[in-house]
Amino acid sequence: MVSKPLLLAWLTSIIAMVGSLFFSERMGFSPCTFCWYQRILMYPLVIFLGIAFYRNDRTIYRYVLPVSFIGMLVAGYHYALQKIPSLHEFSTCTNGVPCSGQYINWFGFITIPFLSFVAFMMISIFMLVLRKYK
Image (cartoon, rainbow, N blue to C red):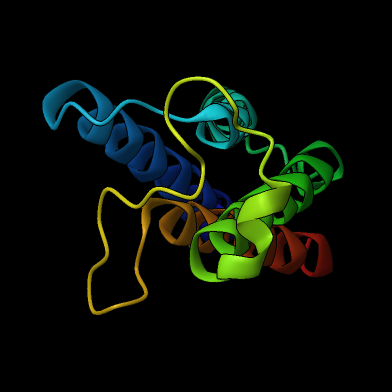
């Protein structure tokens, strides 16, 4: 029997990875330091969740949840750096692209870190559902 939360988590990670590659490779947006951290946390999830889906491994939540929670924290902090002007002085991005920069700002609140936060949150929710109904 196919696990829907596992499939949905895997698809979410694939969409997040393809989206980040689209923004950098197709649109030409250079990733900042925090964007790289989010990529480092998201890209392995594509592989881990894909293998878990193929094997129907419902215990993968043990490994994915900590990574997705850390990803949420990084993305949430990055989003706060963009949207709260007083946090700009605490930015760790000193070389290259500033972490407070916003390549996109759809509807006044949807930025790339916001999209990353939503993806990590969805994966976390799917893993919590998987944990509950394993």
